[in-house]
Image 1 (cartoon, rainbow, N blue to C red):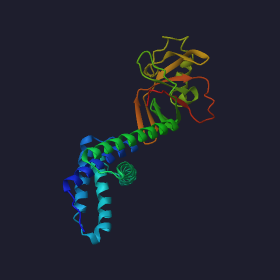
Image 2: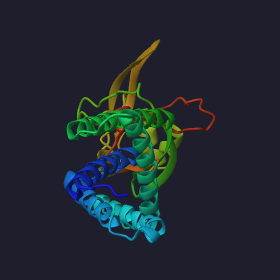
Image 3: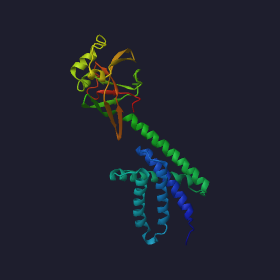
Image 4: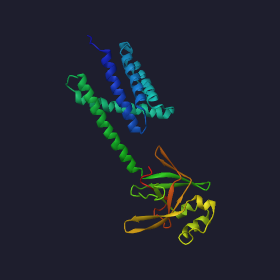
Length: 281
């Protein structure tokens, strides 16, 4: 008993599936990869699938398994230019999980049907769109859960570690620079700037133009008007040296961040000390 296998069909089908899997893996893990790198990784996967056909039947299962694992790791290395062994293993595992999901999806769609080339292309595109929507929805759900994040603020040569609250409702913008404005507690700012500068900030309305100090001027102090539910007014604003936000595996660096200073505590029971602007992520 034998069956005819067309090597060009094997190559094209495996290339398309591997390309789709590489793209979906990048979406799922939040890793950016160029189309050309995924293309090269998919070519390697397709060539490997063709090579497996030439392995003798007696050894096909153990040899094919080892070759598949090596191929998946090589595809991940080419597609995402990963050097970390831990990340490489994570990408390889994700490739296999998505391959299992796609395989089941394709099996359901093609069961008891003759698979023409145009039908295969349609099913491949359909499964890619479906899983891409699922991945995007999962990422958005994760972002909503990641309300708190670690924040590093630097000013006057000092650095302080904080817990930040990512607030999509905070859309304050500095009218002078157009930069998004985050809000920090006065007690936290006291760890970064001298007590004299903090006192000047409190009395700024009464003492405008009275100080000629390079350190004070480097903070670019001014006021910003805010409006919230049942409350409005002004907040003193300063510009710090830099800010790093650590949100999951994402690191956001903000040069010369603008922060408003709140004299009233956030009543957060110590859970966070800075309210991040919704547009800063």
